[in-house]
Length: 218
Image 1 (cartoon, helix red, strand yellow):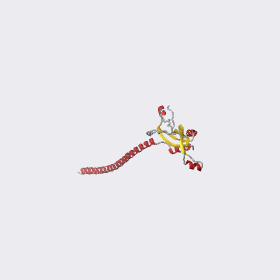
Image 2 (cartoon, helix red, strand yellow):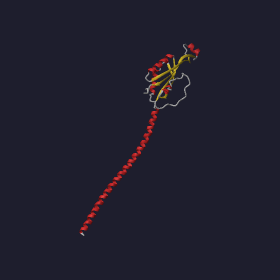
Image 3 (tube, helix red, strand yellow):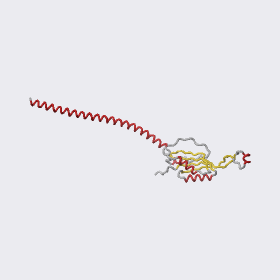
Image 4 (tube, helix red, strand yellow):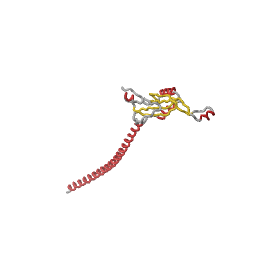
């Protein structure tokens, strides 16, 4: 009987010890599961934020691509300042145009690059769609000068300027009517703002901004 009681007591103590150890392990596992659950919620929140940031990044990247396509890549203020610098005192501009064109990729595109110019005073061409992407800019200067020599000097200054290349001029002689100026009080009283004919040179100069370099294909 004593042996049986001793065995039962030993078995009971072993069961109590095992239950105690098992309960501690269960509590530890539950604590670990709770910690992992919290980390799972945290990871899910990070994933949601990542998805939102990824969507915003995609939108911004699309906007950046669109901005790169429409970016002129030129400093218009600097170009206008250079035009003002090369224009002489005997030249008056009536129109300045900037037209974007796709860069030529072959002989056909080179021939179609728009080097032909219209006679000054002719009707303006129909509006075309604006080219986007890698483009070059054609500059058209339309105005009048006192004589053809001033137009030639302007063409030379444009050729010498680092801002412009492929300068193509076209000009013609014309006569315009201007208000006559009286030289004496008697002439002023009798003339009363009459008009007189003045011979001028109308011109149109087409050139390209020198912000690109053409390289021959290998």
